Picture 1 (cartoon, helix red, strand yellow):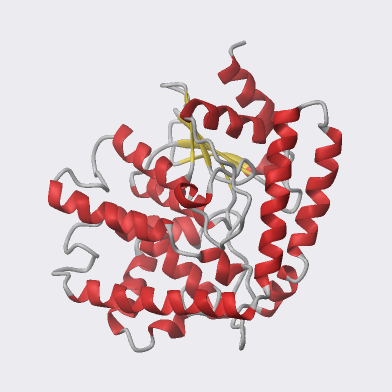
Picture 2 (tube, rainbow, N blue to C red):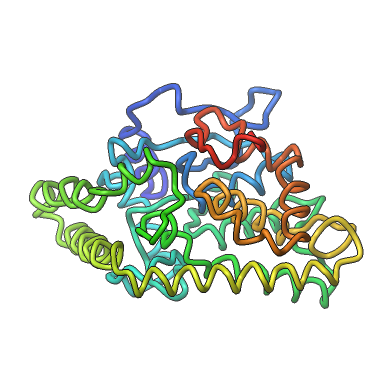
Length: 329
């Protein structure tokens, strides 16, 4: 068995919830070309599912259980390490700036999503790379247009969304914290739970030096997140960044000649803004666009688009109910 097949088989063997292994967007019940490891609540996973749904691409869905920290299991981590080695991604993420971009933060071997292309025998990690790969590989309805000028502007929005510090409002504690109460309770000791899951794995896999190196980097990163999680100055700067982000989005939308970011054409920019805006609203930050009516109108259109609704709201294991999205869900 070649390493490609062996790594995938090892990661599959670790999946513990059979009902979370499904075939999506396929009426013929054939073996899909693509296979995705992801999590329903993960924003980066939602970006990938949004593209899969918008382009109606069939795929095998392996939804990990984060309660069981399946994303930390050796088989899955080694599969990501295998992909990283092929792409020479290099630097491991050891700090936690409350951002997820692999380009600025480094490689984290213990996160989702991950895409397998069985036809071309590729393993792709990092949501921004995956969505571009899917758009290029599956013809028709291209979300990154071929028009050079429009393509450049769409790619700019991809970079902007990739750099949004979403973990800062997901994990971070703020004055007048608007997050659902149950979620605030979960976040109180989330980093201690991560440490409790990682430390035994370091001991259990001590004979695999490269795996231990990856686990230690992950532990270092999460402990850095714990320090920043309740840092009032740092978290205040995160909120200021979101305020500016929404203000700029409202200005961009004012220049649109149609219902979507770039007029009449629905692009990758719209996919990504749908995911970002819904996450902000779910966490209670929709008041950020109270004085930005174009953002509010735009978000409502995005939530109603069938592919986006399927991605965020109707997924078989949806995001838990939030009082802030009652009118949307």
